Image 1 (cartoon, each protein chain N blue to C red):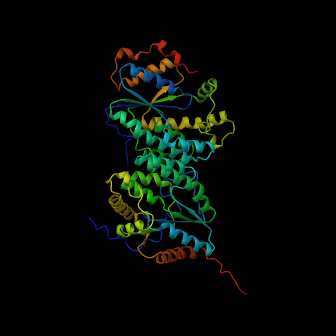
Image 2 (cartoon, rainbow over the protein chains, first blue to last red; image 1 turned 90 degrees about the vertical axis):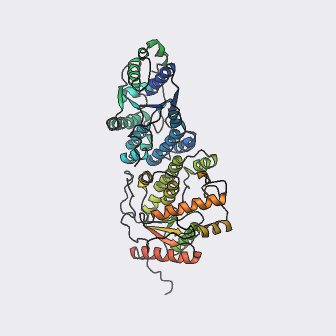
Image 3 (tube, one colour; image 1 turned 120 degrees about the vertical axis):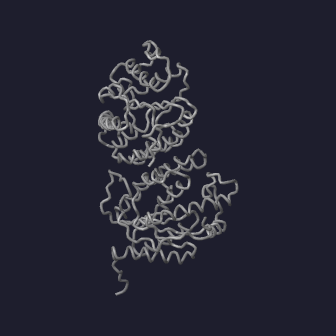
Length: 239
Length: 257
């Protein structure tokens, strides 16, 4: 059995991961972290979940026709992940860069299990992954997440709202039910893989301060810069 | 080093009973329990150009004449993945892991949408290649074997797996006499060299070895594929007949009164 996800990697670079449901604010936090690290003189590369060109076509066809089953959904995302891991994540790590991943294997663990895929099977599937140096989980109550998404008038996506499970024909209700279960899965994952929990109900600045403190334990930064100057980031306010 | 012209040796004969048959090999698809479906899954395995498709067609014809409903399935034929796999193959961006995962996705799609429904409805499902081809190809390319077996844990163990066994010399003769050698079947991605003949030979020897190593583990019924099409078919029919007949005896149709 491969155990890459449970053993520390020995690349010179660092891998930091943010996790959380839609509306948890993780992408905002990742953006702020990237800016800070770059300002500190680090070379930073950001990679997003489900973004490789190779499987985009299949995911799109599948979504359009509502043709993906929980298993094919799971395997397609693993394919995308494998593609990005080998072409986008490992090379910068080898080059000593900092890789920031917006969602990682834990997203698959949470979503696929919610869809009824065997939990252990998904974990074994992703056992080729590199263990992050730090994984930050932005925990948010489902109501806060829904409110944030509504306020931004974001149209809920079919699979993100779990519409394929047919638990509700109302996208918002479906999102609530589906992502509510995803949150329960995350709680298990946090314990199992030692993710750092950030209270995503707090202010953006407060959260970012905690993020930078945690990250600075893994990378060299000037201590005085850990404190966030509020004016630097207010324009990124998403809500 | 074994002589490549020797056909790989197998323990005689392929174990006939397999209590896993019709069940998931490993970790299941929890939302698709398999409870006593009446259909049967029969896989025909073997390397490229060994004559699987010909045997499949003849077997299908024979089964249908006998009154069995037959559904065929192949490798990389699902509507969901076929375009993606074709693009990937031609664009050279595939690494061994994405290669394996694309095929697994394709297989999952066919399993859920073709194979399981057909087994449920009582068909005989004939599979031209099965997971063993994926395991062999990935194994040759150095993918972790235990990881591969876990990945394909959701596959259903066939009731019968026929492995068409051949030696590389006979295989090369057949390939050259018919359609010639192609890039992937020659394992050119493994960069054994620029010469397609040498690459084909090296790659297929490795593949045959990989298949042979799975024979006991997966209860292959090994069929000597160096014989004529008719002789091979005869053996397949004898074994398939013996397996299907006692299970559900077809009433003899009365044609004359």
